[in-house]
Amino acid sequence: MGKRLPTEPEWEKAAKSVASELEHMTGAVWQWTSSFFDGYPGFSAFPYAEYSEAFFGEEYKVLRGGSWVTDPLVARPTFRNWDLPERRQIFSGLRCARDV
Image (cartoon, rainbow, N blue to C red; front, side, top):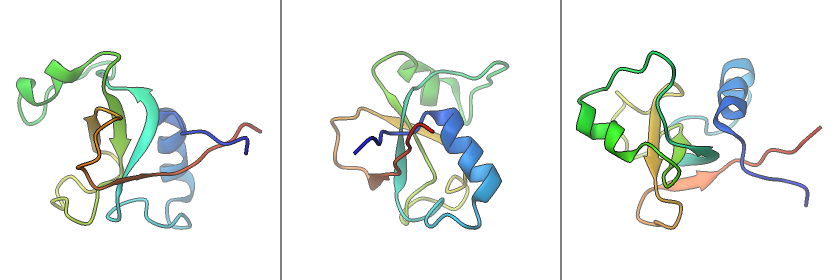
């Protein structure tokens, strides 16, 4: 169908530019991206180093948005979550992108 998972920068652009028009950007399900989980330039650990840095690399993928069971502190477009793509126990879904 010519669709794919968005990269994390594509997801962020959509969240910033048309978030009020896109359904479920936060609070419905975590949304998968095609990006590997790694630190941004200038990264500092939150809430502690072992919470995220141990998962950097090409195994874990980035999820964004938050789910309905997520604490409101992190259920926001700017928070980055991660997991293994084969796991099904998290409240996740996807948003499709396509090349233009």
